[in-house]
Length: 274
Image 1 (cartoon, rainbow, N blue to C red):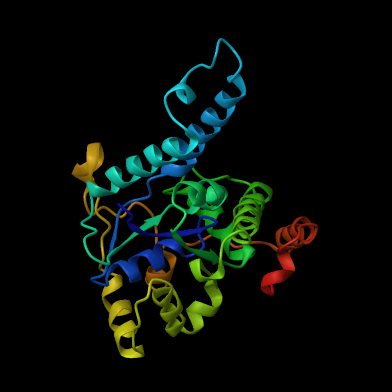
Image 2 (spheres, one colour):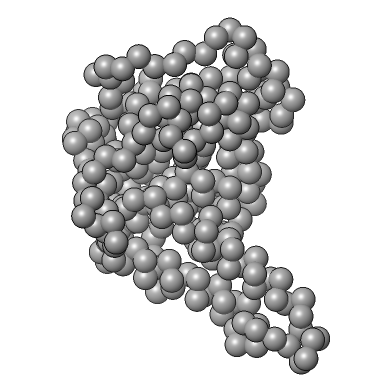
C-alpha cells in the first residue's frame, strides 16, 4: 500500500533538521531519526541486483534475478522501507512521513525508482556557512563524522547539491521544492511552500505557532538505540544561534577565497546567488 513520504535532503548543516522539526510539529506529519536507508540498503541492493542481471546467460541464470523480476525486487525494497517506518509512525489516512537524511541527496535517483511518488525538499545554504558549520562540528559533536578541512567540506557541499539538482531534473516539479536557507531565515512564511507540496495549506498565524513550539520538539529514537529517545544528537544552529556559548570557528578571507576558487569551477555555484 502506498505511503506518503517526504524526503528532506541537502548538504549537512544546511537547515534540514530545522525544517524537519517545524514540519513534524504539525499533526499530519510523522518523522524519525536519520535512517540512511537509501545510502546503505537501498542503493547497495539495487546496484547488486542490476549487476546480477549481467549473469542471465551463465548457468541458465543465477542468484536473486532467478527469484525476482526487477519490478518485484523494487517492490521488496519499498516494503522493507515501509516496514522500517511502521515501527516509528502511524501513517493512516493522509499523514506524511518525513525522512530527513541529508546524504539521501546523493541517491535521489534510487529513491525515485523505489518510491516513484515520494516528494522532496532540497535545502541549499551559503557554502561559507556550511563549511564553517561542518568544521565546527568536526571539532565537537561531529568529530570523526565530518570532514575537517576547508576543501573537503566545500566538496561535500558541492557533491550533495550537484547530485540532488541533477536528479530533480528528472522528477516532475509538482514533487519537489528547492529552498534557500537564507530566504527562509528572512521570511519564515516560505515554509508554506513546503506544506503546500504535501497539500497542506497554512495561514501565517499557524506557521508562527509551529515555529514557536518547534524548538522544544524532540525527534524520537527507536530500535536498538531506543534508550536514547528524545536525545539531541546535533546542534541546531537556527534554534540555538542566539544562546550558543562556545566560540565558533570563523573562516579567514584566504579560506573564503579558496572556496570561491574551488566552487566557481563547478556548475551550480552561481545559480543560487552566492
